[in-house]
Amino acid sequence: MNFVYLSPHFPPNYYQFCVHLRALGANVLGLADEPYENLSWELRSALTEYYYVPNMHNYDDLLRALGYFTHHYGKIDGLDSHSEYWLETEARLRTDFNIDGIKTADIPAIKRKSLMKGMFKKAGVATAPGIVVRNAAQARRFAREQGFPLIAKPDIGVGAAQTYKFEDADQLESFLNPLPPINYYLEKFIFGKIQTFDGLTDQNGDIVFSSSLEYSQGIMETVNDNKDIYYYTLREIPLDLQHAGRSVVKTYRVRKRFFHFEFFRLPDGGLMGLEVNMRPPGGLTTDMFNYANDIDIYHEWANIILHNRFTATFSRPYHCAYVGRKWNLPYLHSHEEIMKRYHEEIVHSEAISGVFSQALGNFGYLARSPEFEKIMEIADFIHAKTAAA
Image (cartoon, rainbow, N blue to C red; front, side):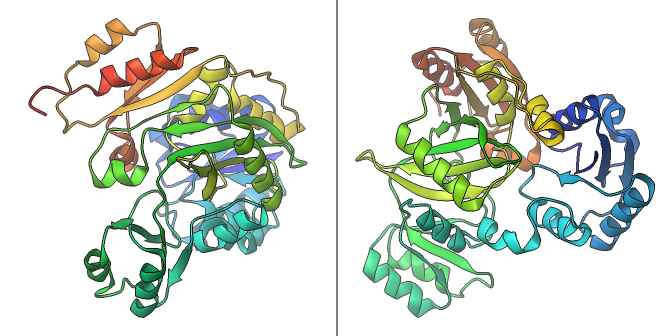
């Protein structure tokens, strides 16, 4: 098998996908804008060949790279980056080189929040009322009908970038004057906790691995209000969340891919669809899958790609939590105190790349325990502030 991996060096933990592809016999062909000598030794050892381009946004250079790989190795069988950022580029390359997987025609329903709502509806999952804002009068009419608070976010966008919350008409008017040049999706603000349904499907579209995350608060609040964040895997996935997630997988016909679906858990216990992502959850979440289950999800993905087999067994014996800290907040406890007190539970810690730090913090800890109360205790200890805070 010839597999092209875009940006194999970033995020830093994703090099492991390449390592396991190569270990199972694939030709792993790296393509990125990072000089080869800057790649880690582990990644370089996993690559059959690496093609450097100065600018990954120059599509002609990517075409030449895949043409080179095709000429030297034959037909390209697979291509991925597991990154939201490159999703459209991947689809375009798959379309142009007839590679199996998500194509350009599939992208709108995956990237546009307005079309995601239709797919949720098709899957039988409720969503918040919303519209694509075409003009100010339309937005004002929607506000009168739905009331405040409201949320506006780019119809095509990732995370909380350029996302706004409006508590009243004056705040909405400030947003509308002038109306942003890109399409915005305006929707009713939903009070609830974010829960996810995440997993991996095989080549037939069957779910072979599933997990769920719950967040301390939304990414928007974390970014806009400079708050700390933590999130953790659930040991038991609620049945209604499983049903909704599986229905969305079927509606999108997800095959041999990771998926990350976000939902609101409402105060009355109900469930409402929020967003669809055709990739693993970001940050260190793939490592959290491993620590929560004592498996190697990187190996299992490669095994699906090459042999359509998932051989691990998983029973979610642990909660695994990500707890982030920001350099500009006055924490009560030092890193050394944290590690001394919770050395048995903290399985990993590292500095977080600047690209992700606004949402995830500048430094992150992974902690696991079979006891939910212990996870909450650790998160509270890490996030505790000085009296002056």
